[in-house]
View 1: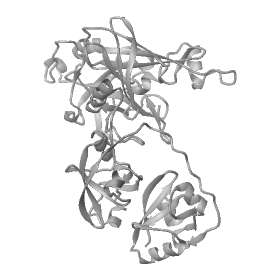
View 2 (view 1 turned 120 degrees about the horizontal axis):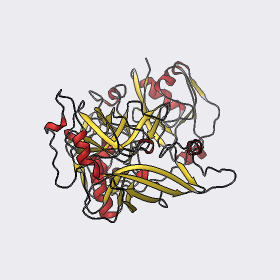
View 3 (view 1 turned 135 degrees about the vertical axis):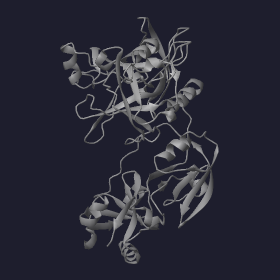
View 4 (view 1 turned 180 degrees about the horizontal axis):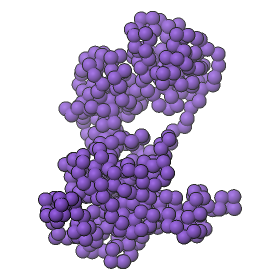
Length: 476
């Protein structure tokens, strides 16, 4: 479950569209519409339903006297006591020390491979059970999990199973009808339908998935099942919803099936996903920042930080560069770059077109491999006295030697307080100003000189915690 600020983004579980072996269901099949020309999903659901599976997960948890719910949301106990099925949100507890969850999935091969969400299968110690529409149940083996895309592959010991028909998410159009079969709140094989609301949606902290947004009614318990078109082809795996209440509010998101299948192939082959890695921190080039870098419009991915000993560092990429193309393909938005690079194999060469000092240049990079996700410690500089920049509403002071070492920087100015123009630009107390228009800032006096020479707008390179970003600051 992911909870962005102000809106709860709730992982949900959605069942699948599938087709039984030997069944073709064309998009222009007459049974896809009724006599009035409206979509009719009845025949579709009847034919593809057998490849929809229900997934239940029992996860061992630590329980003590001070925390009788074992770390689970206590509302789950309320649901359980009143006999209300509440799978996946919050997790139910069938007994002490066990957390129970329910999701959906769909069969992608007749020998028992099943696709679902990573958050459905839980942690490594979870016991996963798959239930078919004919009531057969199987203990499943977790083949592999990719947390970055929220895709998991599990395997059951069975043969000649009905399978889904894989579609093409790129061919899906905004406004087209789509449908889903799932287990919202434990009600198995519930069918819902709607339209594609948008494509290539990028959610906070999601760099590898261009989500399909729909208005299909999905709820907790639908996670892991596919989204399908009128032709019975799977075009996505339903993964998240936006909600203020914890229930459906008209916005749901699905992982495009092409992204999921690429992950599935690697999980089956290697047990993990191998991704290329540049070793840069990037941000969007906003219309306010573009002029500061000499760009004619907002485009590309702005390099806010280059990791030492990374592929980018070895290739000579610098902070302030803007990546415009990868192997000749335009990078229109910064969020496209991690996905494009991640699809390349580690060790492969890519040709980057970057923008530096007002002109484009080509750089060849040999990619590293993306490591496993690890948590980074937060760094908090110690406050102190400052120097005022009244017109900007800014109060700063130089970093101490200890703070510079802690932040691993050669110098910079700690922001003591902000107001006015600086606050509107997005600066916050505790930020560290490292550069101005690609010039390093090492002292208050130098900062004043750079401001005096600047035009009406500057780009500040700021370190915030363990991340670096550029912020546009208007001086006029």
